[in-house]
Image: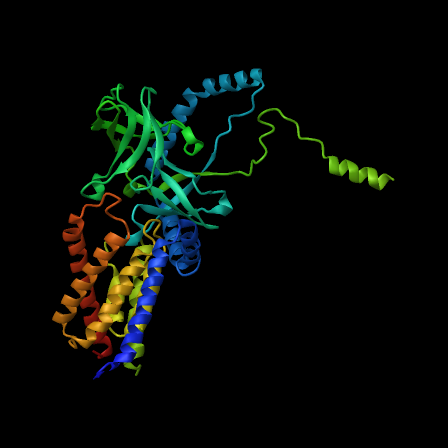
Length: 295
Length: 159
């Protein structure tokens, strides 16, 4: 039997080929993240590169036209804080010196521009205009002056893709600012994206956290630094009788309002010997070589 | 004068580049999803398996920044493009009314497949999304498809 599109056999072959392509798409969907990541990375560094570079340029230009009075006000506030804490830091330095301790090991932060990704499938993510060449690594915390925004998930040479706190996979170990309650902070999706909140989950049942309490990162797991502001408790979400409670938190940072952030970067400090006052082991191979050369 | 096929695929290429330029370079989320428009209109012009392959390539491009549900758009586009291609056997029409209905149904099917394949329900997205925001998105995409087709026909004189 013939139809206008060709023979039945041709149609069957056509359907089989289309089926094979569908299977290929399903395999792509089911691939583990470590196999999907190189595909995304290659697309970002080839097809999408000119578009991302254009947005980086626009973000840089936008940064140059910021209201100077706002920047001046922020600088003045910062100056006041630094001046007030000057004696404290000197005291801390002297005490560390007396105890023979080196400087605190803390990540270094680099200011970067946020590149907004308008693709539907990239919801709750953003790009930054710094990458592995700047020391950005997978897991780098991304902070703003108002608190935690998210963390880096994929890194290319000059750009990186990060998730914000609305992303379903965002988690951070947290505690109340007084340390009375601790748990894991995770996102809660609202009816509209503007209504998204955070929740402090798995807190001890006997501890009562009052609305208005500030929640900060606890530093556990060594992924996020300790004490970064996450948000303010607005009420109880759930009380699993006799076991644990969770609380809703109003986040300190709204992702849509952010244009500049700070991202943690590595500075290639692989040897921590100087931190613990350990001298480098003798280079026995060099000594042997020298001895052999002497003979 | 350029052939009908050349001018049509140039039009599709412009839609894709425009999508990336507006959404990625300028970060404008308010712009309709022109890559879905390109998938729906282009899918109908190709034969079955070629249409599915076209959907796969466009889907990978659309998912290029998806950290969750990577591949869900590819699955959606393969299905929708293939159905679009087969639909020529049943509906020959290319009137604006037909294109509108086809684009609404096609764009909504993309939303439905993305919702289930991308694990949206597991991420806390309510099923009502498909009836509310999903359907609105489909209407928006259909409007964009009709407007872009009007522009294409006005410029090239082709149907």
